[in-house]
Amino acid sequence: MTDLPQRPLGVALAKFMGSVPVIPETEYRIAGIYSFGKGLIRRSPISGSETSYRNLTPLGTGQLVMSKLNAWEGALAVVSEEFSGTFVSSEYPVFGINKDVADPRYLKYLVSWPTLWEQLTPRGSMVRRKRTTPDTLLATHVPFPGLVEQRRIADKLDAVIDRVDSVIKLRDHLTALHSNLAESLIDSAVASANESARIGETLTFTRTPVEIDEAGIYRTIGIRSFGRGIIHHPDVSPDGLSKLSYFTFPEGALALSNLMAWEGGISVTQTEDAGYIASNRFFFYLPVDDRANTSYLRHFLLSRQGLALVGSACSAGAERNRTLGRKRFEALTIPLPPRPVQDHVASTLDRLAERLSTAYAEPSLAALRPSILNAAFTGQL
Image (tube, rainbow, N blue to C red; front, top):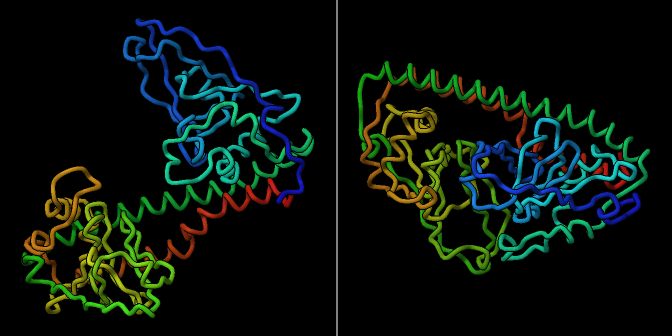
């Protein structure tokens, strides 16, 4: 609940009726809207002859625009000066803001608030087929204090959100540096390789079947894409498990999702993964001998050349249906640098990744902005 007065957005917004006819020989700068409150995006210019729309709407600074199709997941934005003069189609209703009633900065933050998105379209299995109409947006009740309080809240949010964004930019910069360092170290290690070997000769497939007890409680794992590690899912009863087979797995194993390996769904199991189980969608490997360091192999497979190899072992077809074949994966030939080189690369990259994770934990940063907005629009800021 909020201590701020609630009023419909229609008290501050009015549908903008300024669309213009499309002229075939005229070039139009087109804008779109990111989902999840991330603002406007500039698309490639088009000529009037390249669109089937008969009319387009020009955007002006301080207007509000939404996507009918994706407003439910945060595709709304207040137009900044940067996007003034760009155009949107009729799929993006545009609204003028009554500045005698609303501060555009306050509305900018309000439309990036997930709680507002939830009010625009009822959740359900068919949500992606539902559209948010202009009338629905205008009728939606939101925290709407007077102008003085709006400006106070906007001032606070400007200061706090700027700091959060600075931390996120720093995290992204350090992550990019880590990625560049990883590529450099892997390239150097591969250049020092003194042998090549098939993965099936270097690693052994290792997992143990689990007999599901109807009275048991189970914890399952997943593997994030882009090398972001293992996911620990909440406890479930057998009814909450899929019909797939399940397995336990050893610590220190190279782990791959056969559905998402092509996108970096690759990790190494750790002590904290003990007690979890995995479906047959996940492959686990331990070294046959001391020639291979599983952490190094993870970093190698996540490199550009490694992902290219993994991709070659996946089935053809649309990206989301590219399944890693076990036999094809084990038949891949990889370069093996001397073990001390592998150990050095693995320890260097693991230590840096741990420091980045501790200092700039992604889940914490992701939750910070919604928490700040919740505080602002519930009268706690």
